Image (cartoon, rainbow, N blue to C red):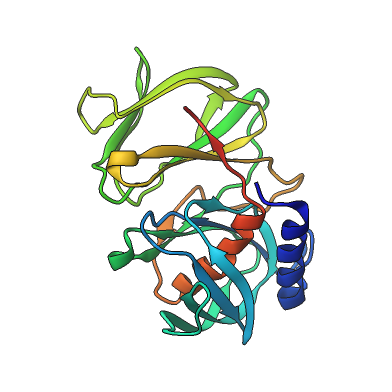
Length: 259
């Protein structure tokens, strides 16, 4: 686990570059969370607006949401500890005010790309949690997510897709992941506890032979902006934003394994 001093160093580097406002509701900001989900990609260093800000970003890291000023960023990505080659050189990477994003580096290194999800931070109804499942295992087939001995909750979820948010009663559940339309259990998740008022993003990550589950838990803002239900898209320029923010995840990692 990283030390508090290292976390503070990362925060300082980010604030020096962005001077981000603290509240999502404040005009001109967006919420951005980043996931490094490329299982065979090496660690990288990132240069933002000419400043080397982020270093040695590993797999798997998921950041907390960060309030960032909307606007344009010039970002370069190089191998950790090196100055070349510049594997990503993106000019004018833009983020929009009033939106919340999960930006992930997905796929194996030879085919690495960004996957961008639009997140819904609306508070669940009383006694409910919201659950979204995200398939980021590049060589795993499409899957179904089921209650053990019960109904199928999500069908035919393929890489690199995310399900819709499911409103679920708070409580404890035994869940299973199987190939789409099949019965063989790939992941057996017993005693998964869901707390009322929380938003759960459940990531299937790694290659198929070592697939695992990581969970990011969010407490909604007191007064969230109205957002679309969910979504995903890719943009070459946003690869750089993925890498640039991922080190924040290395310092502010929000990971919880379900086993």
